[in-house]
Image 1 (cartoon, rainbow, N blue to C red):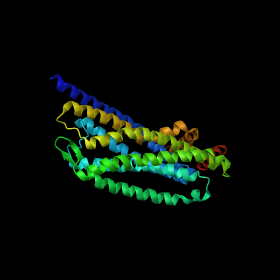
Image 2 (image 1 turned 135 degrees about the vertical axis):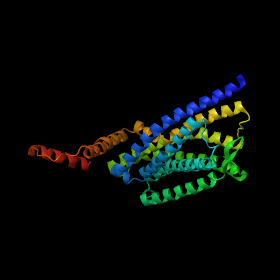
Image 3 (image 1 turned 90 degrees about the vertical axis):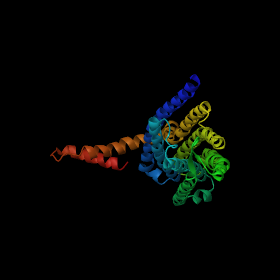
Image 4 (image 1 turned 60 degrees about the vertical axis):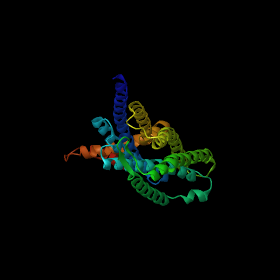
Length: 339
C-alpha cells in the first residue's frame, strides 16, 4: 500500500507545483510582455531600430506562449495532467503551438544579437548591410518556416497507451533526437546568440572612437547590454530542459513503472517551469540592468499611457472657465503630445 502512495504523492506535488508556478509565470509574463510591446512601439527611436523590432516579435511570441502555458496549467488543475493523452487533436496542437512560439522566441533572440553585431561594427559597409526592411523580410520568412516546420513535426505526435502523447514515427524520433532538439532548438540558437552578443559587446566598448551622434552611441550601448544579459538568461534557462527532452524522446518512461514515472514527471515539471521563465523574463532583465530603459518605461507609462487614459476617461466638461485656466491646460496637452 505504501509503495503506491509514494508515487501518487510525488505526482500530486508535481501537479500542484505546475499549477502554482504556471500561474505565477503567466501573471508576470503577460505584464512584462505587454509593457515591452508598449515601450518598443510607443517610443520613436525604438520604432526605427532593427533590434527593437526583433524584441517586439519575441514579445508577441512570448505573449502567445503564455496563453498556451496557462491553458496547460488549467487542464492540469482539472485532470491532474495536461490532457494531451486524452485528445489527439490537443496532443498535436499543443506541440505545434509550443514549437512555433519556442522557435520564434529563440531565433528572435539570435537575430537581435546578430543585428547588434552589425550595428556596432566599425566597418561602414557592414553597418549599412542590415536594414529594417531586410530585418522584416528575415523575420517574416523565419516565422513562416517555424509554423510549417511545427505543423509537420507536431502532426507526427500520437497517443500511445502507456506513454501518452509521444512521437509515433521512427524517422521523426531520430530527427528530433539528432537534429531538432540538439541543433535547431538548442545548440544553433545558443551558439549564434552567445557568439554575436559577445562580439557586439566587444564592438560597443570601442564605439566612443567612432564619429557617431551621442544619442546613437547611447542607444547602441543600451541595446547591446540588454541583448547580452538576455542571451545569458536564455542559455541558462534553455539548456536543462533541452537536454531532458532529448533523453525522454530516446528513453520514454512508461506509466507501468509508477515510481520512475512519478519522478520523471516531477523532473519534467520543474525543468519545464525553468524553461518557461524564458518567455516572461526579458522585460525584467531589461529593467534591472538598464537604467535608461527604466526611465523609458516611466516615460511611456506616465507621460503617454496615463495621460491618454485620463483624457479618455475624464473628458473636459463643456463649461465656462476663466481664461487664465484654458491656456495652461492647452499647453500641457501640447507638451504631452510632443514627448
